[in-house]
Image (tube, rainbow, N blue to C red; front, side, top):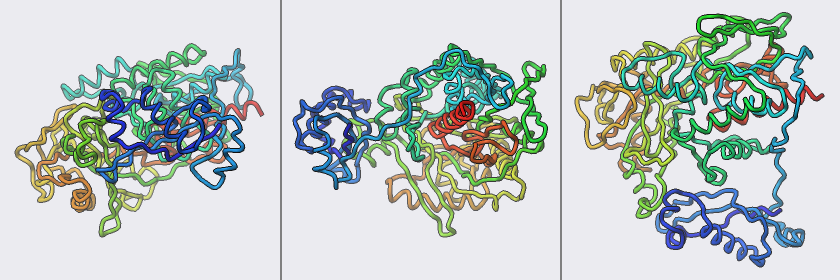
Length: 556
């Protein structure tokens, strides 16, 4: 199998030859596949009909020159006498043998023993049903280990109802909200699947294939920046849950971990709570995939003796611009023909603070993502079509333990809570919103301009500066001048700012060793909440990794 990179086709050619609706949707159909196959054959100087099992692995956009925009493809295929072709192009990095990735995991072990750790035959327990927990559970279930998943929130349908009620009325369920429930925080996001994590094992590709197998759009397998969308992700997550149950797994919603109990640094049991009643479960294998907002659970585990440390993260605001403005800047005259444009921006301030865009949502919405009474946080989300009138992104500033005002591992949580309380008070329980011009002079906005807020949840005109430490507000203001040179109009006076974006990643890392266990044998910290991931894909990959380590120990 040959892997060929750097196949380039002018965007003008694609727009001329491929039906407009497919170009706009960003999906590859037969005509584009034919163009790419022909270009690959010409590049390699081989007969097109000799190329078998032709597949596009990746498509990316080169938009640096607006008058010469092009798609760049990476493809794989089989050829007769591949060794001769590889020898001919051996010094060219664009031509390679396709590496064999790890097993797809499709072989399901029947009648598994479930014997983990000390051999007592105890079922593994997973706390949290975000991407790390879901993918760990699926992997264990495929090996016949019948995992138990404890999720403090609700199943997707009930969760969607509770979140909608919160956005409409401000009535918060602190166990089932944008942060907690089936699918984790990613269920109410853009469903972005791109990651910067290196993937020599093929876990990232496998995560994408599992999503597709359970109902996600097939184009996530080849897009450079794949996404599913909030409107589709809920059904995909439910399909994976049904598959886990079919394989013998068990899912307990509205069930919260109260504490873990161990002796001689070895896990013995856990205590969980459902509907006010506590239950003790004998347990020697516990995957902690709690997500980045389970502050009460993390605090309990730390106070019980689990080793943790504070870690850097980022804090800032959400900014909204017209999606049309972003499209014109990024794609020029092609913007009406292509999928909604995104952007990625970075800047270092004069004080050496890093400022960057995060979780950019084309055609999306800012959402009230609060999970604790009296505290307010925002996030961004998009539906699959990304057809909203505005683009939004977090513009965040890096913070580290030296900024937290404390020295213990939970000081980052205290830092988040302090400023989320400020946001709640500033907006009187509603999302604080401010024009950029008013942000620069530190005054409350009294009206809006041409940019109409697209916010899920109630919002109030306010002074967003009051929701941020001064150094963060100053860094954001400074960065907009540079960002405006990259995207004309970014610093427009009527750009909408909303605060506070404080849940970019976990402020805590639960330590684990080479066996992926904490200082307590049998406890496996996992995913974003434990400090080992930063998004849906990387969290899912870490869930697979932890599950595979447990299986490896079982088989050794």
